[in-house]
Image (tube, rainbow over the protein chains, first blue to last red):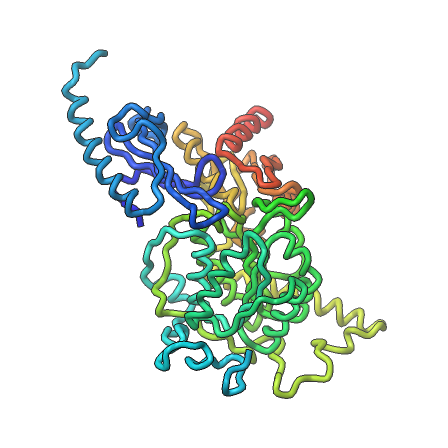
Length: 107
Length: 410
């Protein structure tokens, strides 16, 4: 089973194409892990996006391709490799949050 | 395939080419009370495909015989059934010649008093419909897994649950799984309900193919060392056939097949009893599944009534509506037969608008809901959105329909 920590929302693939989406959240950042159907079951994989939440309470988010973690959609073919990435991402998000707090408030 | 002892079901290590100390997996399991299995046993959470969820359900179902003919998207599940046969969890399993043969043979197996499982998809179901429609009248408890797909031309293998409408008036118990979890739970519940003395009917668990069967989802399963009690063939509304002394003709009641005034009345009574048995099954499903429906956000003015994958899409739609401060209710219909008339009426009694999204062209659930709510509910019922032929139903589609609906019905 994939990591359940920081799991913000589990839902059916909102595109309606089947499968499930897991949204993880650490402060304002997070990741979306989507597992959809494949005609060849052995080809089932995870599609992962780094995301930035647009609201503090809702699940609204934008895809974020500007972090050091990833500048594109990532694919993982095993739960193990996904879990390793999630752990790494959680640590990165914590650090990113600390760094962003140090920035001057532009508003 | 008979073994060295001449038995058709008793498998030995020698027959199977296994080590001498091989014990069939099913013989290592412990029988557990169904209610304990459904509600008390601890569960482990896995992330598996719908086909794998079906396999884990079959593993715990104490299946005596499985017969099937492969068809996409059912093939994955029945391949998994093959593994279970190899491991000794299913006692007999073979691929029949095609679907009429499959569904006739599985009927014979059930008449012999053993727990019988088959599975099919779209066109396969259509091909075997003559045999399938004879199951309820023959009072044969059979479990059929039905992985829905397009049935009509042009050929497609994508999800579309129009085929379920063909089973609505057969006397079959019909459940519609929303997701992989349901495709694990519902077959076990359906088996137990179908074999009750006052039911004794076949049961079909339908699921939207590919979206569930070929995708992974979270599934909580009970320990594999536990299985359902075996079928007791003599504990039925119509006793199992004694295959050691087979009857000269296998009709359940030969006089019914004569063409005379009395036979018509007998046939009529027989049919009434079949459909009464469908209604009697409701109490068992209520116990096993915790209700024939699931209601989210009771008391809402706007309601969505859905079954199968449409429930998942509706679930997300009402969550997003909630984020925007709008309360929208959801009725998930678990059992299509028996149809949960009173439960639906109770859930939507205060509703003003009811939306019924479906993955088929005909809108069979809309027709079902309208037929039971007509004259008994003040809500306006809207038939849609509908997608079919393999189309998807994005959450936004439901949200847009809700918005339009609110403008139409103030």
